[in-house]
Image 1 (cartoon, helix red, strand yellow):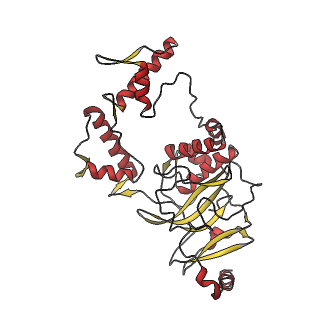
Image 2 (cartoon, rainbow, N blue to C red):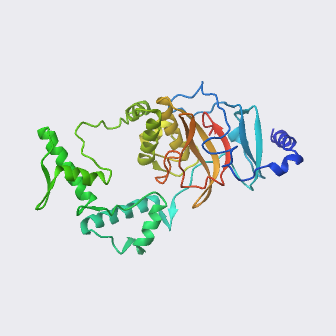
Image 3 (cartoon, helix red, strand yellow):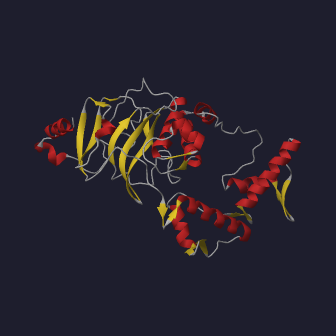
Amino acid sequence: MLLFFSLALVLNVSASSAASVNQTNVNSSATSLDNMAVNISTSNYASAGNATNSTTNIKSATVNTASTSNLNSTVTANTSIKSATTNTTETSNLNNTKAAGAPVIVNGLTLAQLKDGTSRVQAFFYANDRLPTYVSFGTRHIPIATFVKNIATQGLKINTAIVDGLNVAQLKDGISRVQAYYAANGKLPTYVSFGTRHIPIATFEKNIATQGLKITTKAVAKPDTSSVAALAKSLKGSTAYDTAVNLFNWVRDNIGYSFYYNTKYGAAGTLANMTGNCCDTANLLIALARDDGITSRYVHGYCDFSSGWYGHVWAQLYVNGKWYTADATSYANSLGVVKNWNTATATIYGVYNTLPF
């Protein structure tokens, strides 16, 4: 079977067209991450949380195949391609059936350590209204300027805002007290006190708005995480785009990253465990999107992260006639925007209705 596949590949890539083969750039018009020339039938999507193998029917696609001495073709074994342009990428000893995303290591620190350091620095700032000189990790003392740069690579930051003499912790404390007053009295207070200061409520509302904060005068439903379907329903917005943003942001902000290969938990298991690798993060996001009526698909590629090259999987959501790349594995990313790996050099292995691994 492998010999037959190899011969077929050689016969379909003619010497006369070799000069036109695109070896690395997947951001060209043919293979844009958001608008790949792929038309996938959406009539038979898997139900929410189902990550089992199924046949994917790709009617028109730009496909990258790797010329390699150790290529395992399991990923595309269930893929029926009716019309395709073949782009060849030279890669040695690459097993393209494995995808996990990249483990986060920045300046020798894991993502958990970066978050812990950020939390400690933030607490120091709130207590002292200034940043510390360094951040300690065991016997290591990392200068604060270096640490701020390190956490920025993962979309983390320390909030050093001072508004009308108040830091964000003080503003949030004020909001909490105002909302408690409203709940007890059905109206807002005249002012908000901070020690001997009395800030008029209208001024306070303007102050907190500069930090994206507000006083809620009606009950806000907490997302229902009892099941994938319940969560999708509770995150549904007023428009398809709002819904897509709500789903992406929730998965990005609430699902932790774990390093392992391929699917392990599926959508329901990832929600229950609140953690997953790139495959399971995509499984959950796509299940949520489909429950809310948003067409979605998987993309599998080989990507250059700051820590090296890794097999990787992410989602794409189809909203208002456009495919949006949705990689929720990093705080640095947003819907349609990827910052944690180089989109210009990625090799795309396949696009699927159901992830086959």
